[in-house]
Structure formats: C-alpha cells, structure tokens
Length: 138
Figure 1 (tube, rainbow, N blue to C red):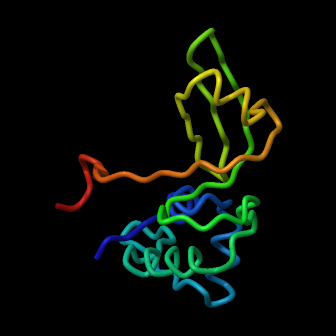
Figure 2 (cartoon, one colour):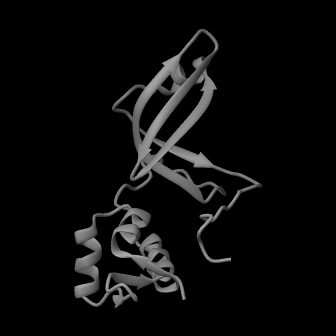
C-alpha cells in the first residue's frame, strides 16, 4: 500500500495542507498514521478522490463554449508572452499547472494573447510519458 503524507497529497492536488486536513476531518478522505507516526493517506484512495474531484464542474469553465475531441483542456491566465518576428512563447498558469506553448507570432496577435488574458490550452497527444520517483514503489 502506497502511503502519501498530507503535505505531498496537498501538492499533488494543488491545494493547501489545511484543505487536505479539512477533507480528512470531514470524512471525505481517510487519514492513517505511518510507522513514524506521521499522518498519511492511502495512495489508491487519494487517486480515487482526485478522480472524483476531476469529475465535478470546473470552477474555471471553458469560456469558448466550443466542443472538441481533445479531453485535456486547461483554462488559465496568460502570464507571459515573448515574441520575435516569427515565433512566440506563451505561458499560462492553469491552476497549479504552468503550461508553455510555442506558436507563431501571427497567432499571438490574432488571438490577442498578452499577460492577464484568459485562455484555454488544449492538448491532444498520442504519446504521454509517465515517470515515477526513483525511490517510489516498483
């Protein structure tokens, strides 16, 4: 059984330690104690909880109102735009996730992308690399 400390669970879910503690006190997430006496949550239970959270309505709904086949859509705020004559780098903060996109400078101008603008990063990938920590379970 994988045990995840409260602080680590909070980082994984993009919330504060106090939020995870409130969830455990409310009975939404079971809390255990590890061999060292630290508060932990079961990894499988945390994964199920995260999945349930992902199924709830997004607090930042997609403002485009467009339906697409891509399921990985991240609503966020443009935080930085670096443009040269041909290409641009656009950074978005989507909740706890920093998304960076490289696109044409023309697309940046057409979309009106600049810091403070709300945007949606749409990711459609055929390959996703999954890694685990070196000290993690095998």
